[in-house]
Structure formats: C-alpha cells, structure tokens
Amino acid sequence: MNSTKLIESFQELKEMKNINRPTMMKVLEEVFRTIIRRKFGTDENCDVIVNTEKGDLEIWRTREIVANGDVEDPHLQIEVKEANKLKEELDLDDDDIEVGEEIYEQIFINDFGRRAVLAARQTLKSKIVEIEKDELFKNYKDRVGEIINGEVYQIWKREILVIDDEGNELSLPKSEMIKRDFFKKGDPIRAIIKEVELRNNSPIIRLSRTNNNFLAKLLELEVPEIFDGLITIKAIARHPGERAKVAVESYDDRIDPVGACVGMKGSRIHGIVRELKNENIDIIPFTENTSLFIQRCLTPAKINSMRINEDSRKASVYLDPDEVSKAIGKGGLNIKLASKLTNYQIDVYRDTEDIEEFDDIELQEFADEIDQWVIDALINIGCDTARSVLRLKPEEVVRRADLEEETVLEVFKVLTEEFESNDS
Image: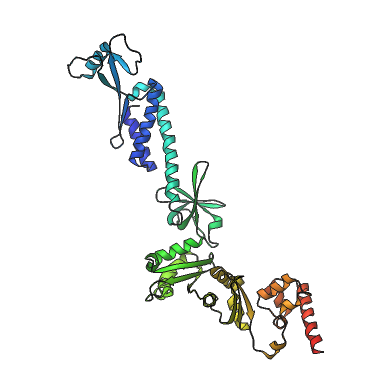
C-alpha cells in the first residue's frame, strides 16, 4: 500500500466521521510518529508532513554527518561516505559534504513494512472513533434542552432509535413518548434533547417528548414574541397528550400574552396541539396576585371565595355545587395541573346558600367515627360537609371516591344518625 492510497483512505474516513482538519492532521502525525519510534527508536529527528486535502504524506529524517567509523547512533548519525552516496541518490547539489553538517532523507511508507502500515491504519481508525465519540458527546452536551429534528430508524420494545441529519444515533425511550405517539420507520420526528451521558466511553443521547421544556421550545418556535423575549413562560404543568397549562407574562403592556400565544383563530397554538397529539393547552396570564392566579388556573370553574395559607402552601376554594366538577376536571386533571402550576395544594369545597346548610356539620368533626383517609377521599370529590355527602346516592359516592360500598354505607349510617339525634 503506497502513501497516496493510504492517505486517500484516511481522507475518506475523515469525511465520513466529520472530524475537522487540524484534528485529523494531529492524529495522523501522532500515528506515524509511533511507527517511526518503533522502527528507529526515536522520532526527535523526523518531520511528518501531512496534507489531508491532497492525500499526501511525507516523512523526512535528519541525521548528523560524522567521520567514518565515528557513528555511535545510526538513527541520529551517518558517516561521510554514506552521506555522499545518499547525496548522489537524492541528486543534491555538488558541494562537498563536511563533518558536522546535517543531511535530510525522505522515508517512504513502504520502508516500514506492510504489517506496520496495516497496524497504523487500524490504530488510526480506533483513534478516530474515540475522537468521534468525544466530539459527539461535547456537541450534544452543549445542546441539552434544544429541539432536534430526526428520522425514525429502528423501533424496539422499550425505545426508538432516531437518526439526526449527520447520521448520529439518538435514543427516544418509550417512557419519554406521548401516550398516543405512533411512529413507523422513516417517519420524521421532533423531540427535545433531555440528557447526554457517557456509558462505557460511548455517548448516550436521550430525547423526550413529554418533558415540559419540549412544550416551552415549541411555543418559542411558534411565537416570535417569546423568542424575542417580549413574552416569558413563567411555569408549565403537563399531563402529556392530555392537557397542559402554561403561565405566560408580557413585558410590554401593548402585547396580550394569551392572544400572542394562541394566534389569529388559533393559528399558532394549533400546530403545537397537533405535534403533541391533540394535547389540550390552556394559556394563562401570570400574576403575582396568588388568589387571582389560582382562580385563572381553575378556569372554566367560577370561584365564590378562597382561603389561602401561605405557610402550608394550601388554598381552600369554595364554589357552587355545579361548578365543583369543572374545577376538578376529568379524572381530577384540572385541579392537579392547577396545583402544579401554582405550587399550592388546592382543595375544593361546595358553597351553597341552602337553609339546611346552617345546621350542616364539617366532615372533619366525624374524625372519631370515620377514618381520616375516608374523610380525605370524600373531600377530594367536593364533599366537605355531612349534608353534601348525604345529598348524593351511595353508589355515586362509591364510584366518584373509589371507596368500598361497605365503607360508604357505614359513612351514611354515621352521618344520618347524627342528624336524627339532633332532630330528636
């Protein structure tokens, strides 16, 4: 294998691995200096010249000319008579060679032997693979939190293998996918770079479509005001693929943050909703007024009154009976997301003006007769008083509070007996 073909093969490898030229030249020089040291014992008197564009490689060795018979190290010194022969072979100028001067000679790759050259090529491949892994890790480590476009390459049981524009392999675990996500091989895919780590010296790049930052970056792409910093995203709470609440604030009084995010006739938000598999997104104007912010987060429910405990980070919200289900939402999703977004534990209570409410009793007063976990389950469905429980049918309480029928019937018995004893 001659030098030109060898370097050409290295050039192809460089282009495939996308390694920059200075790094490539440094690696090549290091590999060939290793070969020189193995053959001559030292590389101090050798120059390695690499041209990765033309595929050229030249190695020049410098030796000191000494008197005949005075050579102590043949790798560093050469006799006068040998120097004269070498001068004729190299067709140098006709000036006489004198002791103490230096002579330069070119060393060809074939001089090292086929095995040494093949070993050099294998060593170079290994080094380039190492550099490629290191560069890939550094590149993606700096890009954590960015959205990336890729193509589905392979679908496995627990993850999807994604290929980026440069052919790098990325991993999208099933746990980081939206429930309704369905991809086939070759499908385009968008996700956020969640984390990058090294495992056995190989970079592992994990993507996510459920991370809150994925929604934030999609909004940044679709809403120029967010990208420009005129509108900021204060908080996000998501149940991926089902519902999300986003609190936004405008630094310009002339800009409506909600209208800017939604767009004309929903033009901006609809693209994001489709990307997230019809995830229902509520855009909420942020405010430092805690009670007002909680009220906005519980939309579409209309709140009558509210009690806030700043120390325990709890909020007790009172609504009309027909508004309770709206505040709680399907599967309790609305109140859960509102609690996450506001960072307050929100409890919902019925608030009626019925005359019978004057002699109503708080459920907590039955703590001696009813287990606390049962009381908590009833409060979670909006039944915080005895009459609010008795107003429902036992089977409805069983279904909504997810309690055993025997437990519910016992609760009804305790509450009914309390009112009967009061009446008597």
